[in-house]
Length: 133
Length: 118
Image: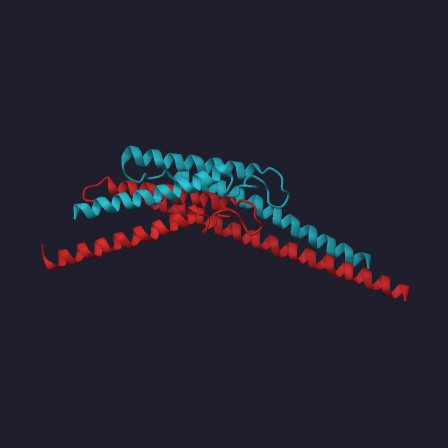
């Protein structure tokens, strides 16, 4: 074994141990609810978001498929990812971003409605007080 | 080197599997909120657009997994497939935009009516 092969092996083990510890820590924290997943697919109002759910499903499906395709080869090799798969993730991600934009638009409309109603109430109350005086 | 590869394989396998199982378990037991997944956010009624997108998502995910297991490579998804999925998203986003637009128009109409009354 050459010096460089030994270096590669040491770096490989260090990375493997580091990632294992990191992943174990995350999984334990998730399991103990120290990392709260309750609102994983929810929007800011607490309702479940379909675009977030879709993003979650595609992420797991593509991650698992990628892992499977890497490990079935000896030696392990990174597979070719066709443009269609990237387009699939792109459509999902793009939809999520657009949906978020629309949601923000809706929220600002709601805020504007609340402000208008508040102004109306204040004006009515003021008018009432003036009449009494 | 072979030992390292084996350890890496098992490590990644357990990480992905553990995360997937935790998320799936919590989704099924309701500890991850799914309230309103198929409801329109504005009207709070059942939304067929959301249902069709959920079905499209599930079908594409199943197709992808089956193809990967059968051919042992990432599938070349047919163009029509992507277009159908894109169409599904357009329908969903279109419905959502329509809801928001209708709400904004309603707000504008209320304001105009208020000014006219004054």
